[in-house]
Length: 329
Ligand code: 11C
Image (cartoon, rainbow, N blue to C red; front, side, top):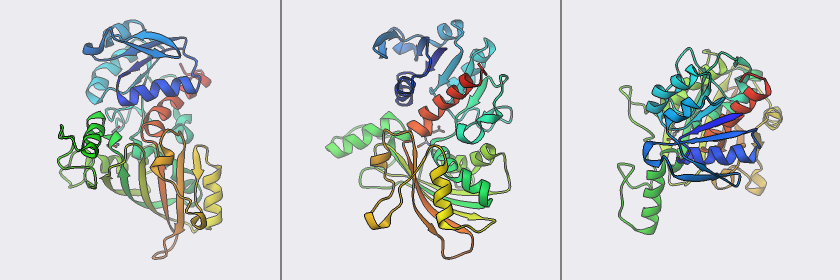
């Protein structure tokens, strides 16, 4: 496969290259694409040096697959140009996610919807991916009605400037601020911008994307998204009310059998998911599984994943793997 990574020097782009190499994705030719100011610089992939190229050069090279992580504006302008030359674009921005003509894919859940005609495929938001993966087999079995999620999101979700802000605060250095307040020793109930309804964009992604991924509008999600001073890995407290009752042993069995999920749940040994262990891993970790004792058919759990891996790069590469395995590119 001739593969282009658009945004190759960004935080997610770097992880994408790492994941492509780790998973031995069949790259026969790699195009590393970056903004004009990085064109001509070099980076190394699988021991070989590659020169960064611009978007126009990349389109002219007609890659089979282009994995984008360069922001919504670049995606809106350039994904259609790649699609027009026959490239299948997997886009990590929010630009196409809610477009009814584009698929929003978590491979373990709905890759089966993909066809050769899908030339722009959207990767969901990081905090959505880990939540829906943990809910998928439970929804199938017990039918969810309502989800209440509170997130504890790492600064890497905001980007390099936020990671720098946290590092500066820890080192006691005055520097540029990514957030309106200090993030070290703090928790900001503010991920992305506020909307007219009082929610943030991040919270509305959590509300809207799951319905599209499950192709089901019979359940609803309400969210509070909070930024905390962790370097990598998003955590979520999820309360889910089902139509049907469940046994906790069965819930654990279903989660254990879900590809991509690892259950870490033993209060006797203080075993539960945490960002320091999820960091650098491709799985979604689930623990603190317990019944909500205040109402019937309702479950509480704690879900943690590396937001740059399963929340972004790994999910995108898994989509690419599905396309190759099913001869859709
Ligand atoms: C965050 N979830 O942690 C965001 C980052 O729509 O792909 C990813 C934003 C997106 O702030």
